Length: 434
Image 1 (cartoon, rainbow, N blue to C red):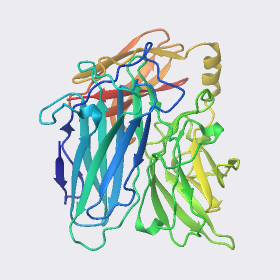
Image 2 (cartoon, rainbow, N blue to C red; image 1 turned 90 degrees about the vertical axis):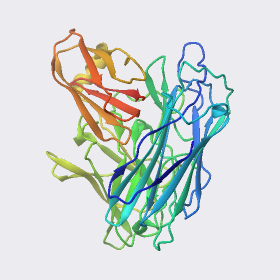
Image 3 (cartoon, helix red, strand yellow; image 1 turned 180 degrees about the horizontal axis):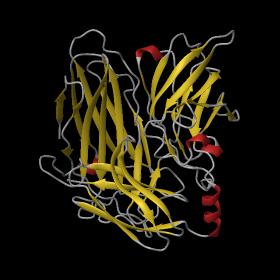
Image 4 (cartoon, rainbow, N blue to C red; image 1 turned 135 degrees about the vertical axis):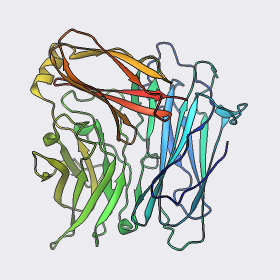
């Protein structure tokens, strides 16, 4: 299937195109493999120029248990016209046709505009359905190619683009696993505007204390001559055998980190991270942690942070005096004491798997809490944008609450159902197909 697209509007959402693919038979028990990353993603054409082709290769390295996964790309450009063609090929797709509707995959394109600069978001979500089981050995490669052709308008800025995000879902456990990049060349997004040309962004292992963190960047050693704005998305998963600290929240921080030079004798920089959309993910924003290290062999050191305009009404998380060389990472701070005590004494809640999965019209789950509390349930897309409020109210202890979410009006793709109570937080992936 080939998709051609041209956009001149300031904000355009393209239609969703439907693809086909098979299913990889899960092993007995259906548990996610913990020994090796399930998928590795890399980009064979890191620099985008007119006429270039971006090729993302998705390799299944571990046992074939991945049931649902997605990958996103971003291209930031400055021009008046851009044509993108997307084609999917690889052993998983041999023998299938792409000219008819199928519930087994979606491709999307979205364009956003800020001033004269545009960001093109390309995404692919694949679902391996039980109706078409296809056995496949480890090492299978699926390539997703996007050919970028631009008009001869001056100002197209070449950008380094990598795979932005990878998600996997085990249908047996209804749990999502975030795939950790295997090497620095493996996938972590980076897109920068022309003011940030002297900054280099690289992958890196997260510090142990911020294993659940999603969000980080690396700065080049060159002094910052001007303000910069970076789009950063990190995907972390704890190494095999390393339990995630119960005392820390999972935190998603995709978005723009604004870097500003700090005046002084030693070149340094300040960083501010907008918290719009993040506060719904974090139980206590005041406990957010920002750490920095010089390289992978150096220890992580905490940096003093402040909230703007105030801690009571935080809109940005900021830190000053950062030496440009090194890596930055962000994580959630300790949870409330009540949650920690409940975790030691027993489960704070029970939540049944989302059904059906994937969903077309509605999806349901049942929530029961151990202590009476206020519960809020929201739906987010994978870019962290709020889609809908599902529930917001008081829930007595031990009384099941059945949540039914109508999904027929939302585009196909992978979403996150976020449930936040006084003593717990939970996230469940939700696949919507058409």
